[in-house]
Image 1: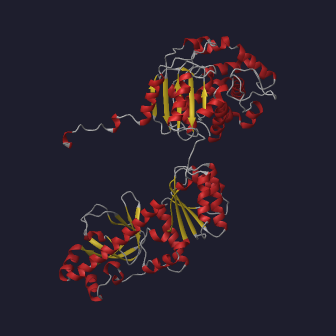
Image 2: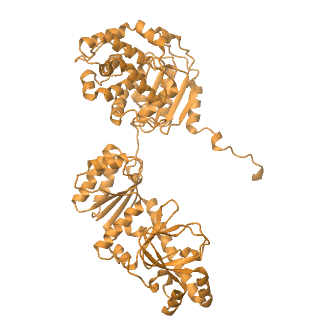
Length: 615
């Protein structure tokens, strides 16, 4: 076949993603499902178009997949109960909530008038509990109670939500059963104040207009630990999210809740307006809309959508498999991958004490079990003098993980070790939480980059074992690795060709991208080789050369900066070429030395890659 005549493949943007395809296929397959009936106990709800059917799934980066009538508005109804419960927890606190409302499944219909033996509603997902929640918010906010609820629902959806007044009036006109529930709660002092005003708040919150897309984003906010993935705003605290999802898991689907968690296994809440939300923590939020309801008051098509996606992608929250060992991407002693150039006697100290510093590079979201594994790994070997924990690949850590990390750092300190953290910004919630939980006498050392942490640890070990040469001492040209093996008189000739150069602290010596014109032999001080974005590639000390790649490259590949006052000898390429022409064998020796230096650098890089792959 002539490959040049084949039809070109479509670009990725033209092809639907696997999840988009699945949602579209599921919508198409369930469009013909005609079982169930539209709710009619609220007259206005009976006017809903039973053919409407929409699906929306919101990922935690804010992307929303949609199919069918996902933009058609309908009233939120009982789905509001989950969010009003969350708001009540935020407004009045768990202690006040617990005194008024239980959290046990009722096993009865959502509009049951029956209460617990202590006269509290069974949970906030049935009408009695939801009315009590609205009462608590009215107690706290007075006439602003509903506006407080509407604002919160809008923040969850990422847009301003309105009320369907016709449904509100219909509910208000026909809500005698809910009035009976409210007055019963008032009799037992579970609802205080103006009962009719509390009921108006309740009827209005149920009459808020949403779409399947809105519901998906609201559910995704719960799945995202309370942060709206579209707006980035924190709407609910993690504590409240956990409690809300817990009650949704046990009681969100009315008297079908047990069957739901058995079959689907995702925290959810339904409403008689035809909506369902499902929120899988850390993964997505799902919203569906179809007015046809089953005998429990749940959307028939909505149930089937949730069952289909849970079964197809194995999403039951209790069917989780996790290899906790994957949190450690590398575990090694520091000497084998030192990011900094060292003089021979310093490298000898590091080699002799290579177990004095240990590095664990961590990855992924850290949980309680992950950090427990890290702690056991650390204690399985003799305790190092310095332990470096790198968080450069860690996006977040659970509160349990943070507490264990703080305890681990304290225990290392108590046993005479030093714990160093790299890769976490000081203003990050994880860093601040660890620091807040540690003992006051424990100092938390931290660095932005792992290489900086390793370099600091190396300096500590070299200093402790008396190996630091004074950086201001001037080395001889004969000590240069690049000139190793040359006769003294030949080194002397090179010295005559070179110019002595001095640079101040912070001064740029080489600029990446400029023409390569010379080689520098560092005699005193310290320099850093950096990328254009400031990332340090290497640190060089007396006895080492920089700019040596000019022997093989025409352009500088990196910047070089003076970390201290620096003295070096600069050998122009023209002068070196003249020397090579006069002494061909010596020129070959210098190139062999360069090859050996490059080979050593490559060896360190390969060692790092090997460790990362082996874990």
